[in-house]
Length: 166
Length: 166
Image 1 (cartoon, rainbow over the protein chains, first blue to last red):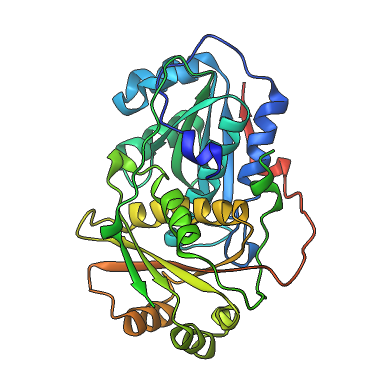
Image 2: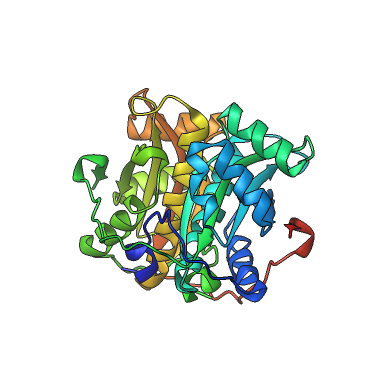
């Protein structure tokens, strides 16, 4: 099993350590290596390093409280101007976000993925805070930083979720 | 950069080699390690090893022609009985599928992800062929096998897709 897949857990407490821009770019590069239908690359990324913006998100939304200690966050949005179908915007964003979580683990960082869409209150908060244009559908926000908590591995394999056609 | 993220490409031609069930289970285990909102684990998996079923999908849908040589395929569906919101079913499936693609690379296998939902014709084909219950939304089908083609690495990093809030 790929170590990053096995070891990645949601981390909600981070150490007060900055992350160099080069490492953030590796994470973005990993996101953009995720496949998309007909290579449409429907995603847009907003990297938030500003402390005040991170703090305001943490204060506004309990589900985003981990932004308080995050070194940075990345909002992944789907661009309706590229492909005007939310199903694709969501599924493509899911794959890109997973690559970010795994590459961040490889870079020695902890992560926590928080859903934005389809929750109206969270979408409004993100759109207003970041002044996103109307064509962008914010799908998720991920907190990144050096982990300040330790979590055990889990095994979620559930044979009841699998059907075999032999 | 994680080697699996960098090296994974869509593979549409596979060698005539079987894949042991233990390796398929590692891929499923990787899928189920993908995060889901509130750990809802909305996915269901249908593993197709039957040659006739794979051939019939290849014959019925040009986009699934790679099933003709695939050793097996996995359909990832979202379960409306667990969470009745397509946005979550799609975004969760995207993350789980990405884990499958990466773990398959780690296992020495090539993969090709083909969208099923939201394309009605493909959803009907999959639902009818596999006799999926109505609560399952088939999101994607992935072909797996030992690669019989070689593809170069790509770098898709596009700075125009990124905004920085410093």
